[in-house]
Length: 334
Image 1 (cartoon, rainbow, N blue to C red):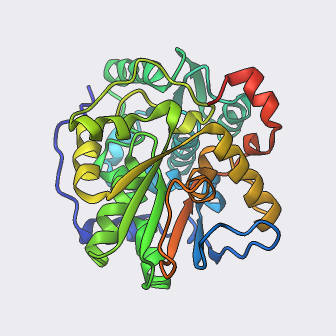
Image 2: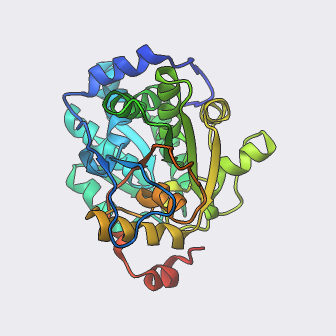
């Protein structure tokens, strides 16, 4: 049985560099673009960069971690097939990894996963199993299957190789623009912000890393407030890819040490940010993909006048384009 609290190595810069060497042939070096809003400029922000992981293979940064996990695992284990649970984006990345390896891949999803992502998973050749209301429910079923079949399990956020893959984002940002002062990163379980924060601070100790969570899934925010992992009683956000009920120890310890602050945004603020990205930049994102920009638009994070901020746009999709009243009727966002 996969245990995310065992074998927790301390990740260092060479781990991220090794991950980049493994994954480079299979993932994209995504664009880093200047945000130049015309009609609706961001308040008080003169220097904003967007790291467009929405243009990554399969539509999110998750491909980095899944591919690094694939090529870090013994081939004889991978031949048994891959199992995971996902809110959608990690599942797509693991399906891609399974396609690269040519092995059977099973993805467990909660009922809150958009049908479009389930269909896309099938197009990558994955077997899709719907289990439970949210990711945590699906994850229990995935772990049970992996244990029963002795198949490798790809955890979406609490695996050192997955974290190392996600952290390659920081290598790209700071090589291209070393003067960046602050990174804004959305948080679900905490995999990407774990990797991004460790790698970024290894390269530039003075850099600030700000996490962004939905108010309806404030997993890390609430855990940091009491200095212990909190399991949420329920999830109240339409941004399902940012919505596990709890994090894991490996992520909590990294975030507590390397992340400077975690701010909260509402679903409505994420929706407004998704529309801002589309209107001003021509970038289509899901709600979670717009979370970091939402923190700026809603003044949840207020940079200094000279501060150069880079916001990670973490996932592509169309749910951010839906009328907010449709989301309200269907998923009751904040």
